Length: 218
Image 1 (spheres, rainbow, N blue to C red):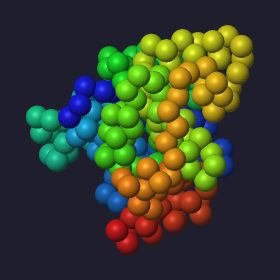
Image 2: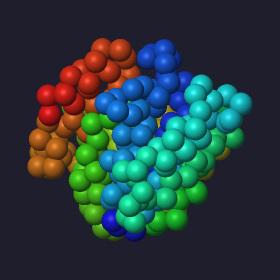
Image 3: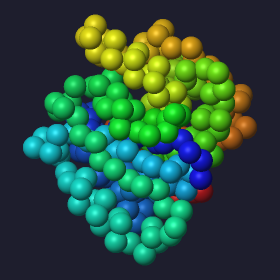
Image 4: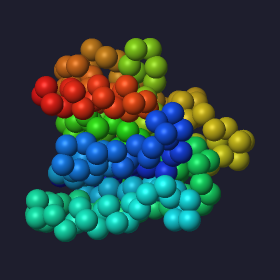
């Protein structure tokens, strides 16, 4: 377990899916629980950023309580899991990520969305290890940057996100323009995750079915 923190953004509207993605069943648990289990052995703490309680489409508190009661998550190396709630509902990833980074204690933070059920902990740890003297390590897959499967240096990232909020900039991809970023290309990523399944976003029912199929096959 390294000293870095992990942040999972789970407060989105899930408009394309039509259901809360974090609560979708995946094997014996939900996608959110699967992500927490994946990251738990590699990070000392995990912050789940959720919608305000009054706007939450499902109970993350209850989900995490039920998970904590399971015998398989009571080992000494289990990460501390905390909930940080957005100030307002569904305002996008810029503010949500800032909230998560502000709550985190680690200098380096891995951040992801809650719709990556096939994420590998080895990939998350490797991105954090690559940061060196950079402010962020952001993968690029199929020509697109992946700011919600990336590693950030806490202080400069918070400053960049705060400036973006002040300027009413909601596109998280533009954080690259405000930080010293190491971009990680597919060749490097495939050495850790050969089929890049860590980046399979479950945004639609078709994506969800594909992720379930791939999980069964593996």
